[in-house]
Length: 393
Image 1 (spheres, one colour):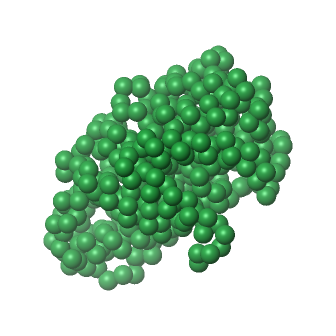
Image 2 (cartoon, one colour):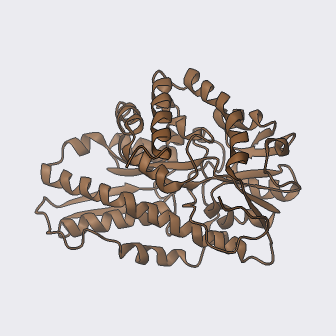
Image 3 (cartoon, one colour):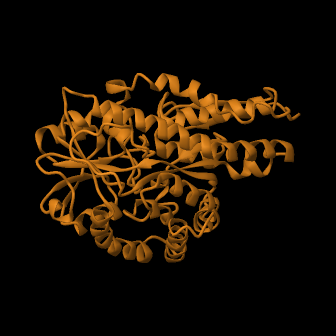
């Protein structure tokens, strides 16, 4: 395990990425995913390399040489929770391009960035109503529809190897069969679950390296019972605060720290008002590529086959997109001499201290988060253990 105090000097292969899926004004459905906040901050500090991501990722188009499939022309809509240049938007554009290539342009998918069709909650409703055919949806925005989806808010559930975590998301029966079935019951068909990267802590006054560092710590969180309970278990004073207030809250000391992926930490310029960043990998932001089930079930075999093939291709492509973007943004933080950040990565012993305290929150999930919560969590825990023990190829 790499461990360093001070500025990191090499790009870490962390697979960390902004998932721009939060709630700016606090008036939408509560967020229970533990993921990143809505990225209206993109205009503040957007990475100059982001404009190149689509070009770079397009080179990984495995479907270019496939023979075009003869299908009925269609114009479809794909809505995402992020803005142009960010992971979800780059993913969706690449998805649309591959589908178009496979059908010789017969299927044209328009991609709508966050805000064009309303809030994240609006986008969920548009998918279930069939106004849009495809959507990238973070489970946190469907927590009242499918409470079992809040499983992705549990801290230290997954390991810190993002490639292994993506393999679990690809192969898990608990997620892809049981959890997915609960979403289908609500008019949302998940085509794939994928990580947008791991979450990290930032702080002032104290580097967060052990639970004792959280004693009395004013930790900003989103409105999620699972997240609040996690930080209470560490001894912190979790404070719910809307994203729009967070930069000022950190700057003025209303809160001492926050959690987000590296992508968002840099993009929102939180490193300007925080002295420390802890590479904790305490959680990862999981999102879903989804389709309206009535639309999907009504497709002819050829069209559905194209969609399914592209979904499979995008598992690896999506992982590469988020890994590259987060590596770039980590470098931005490292190279920001005007706002130096002391960075520290937890080792396994340190992670175990937090993991032990986080166990009690899993019991809350089992008891409170839906009829299938206990079964899904127990099964997923076994799957994670198998992958990290090397029992799964």
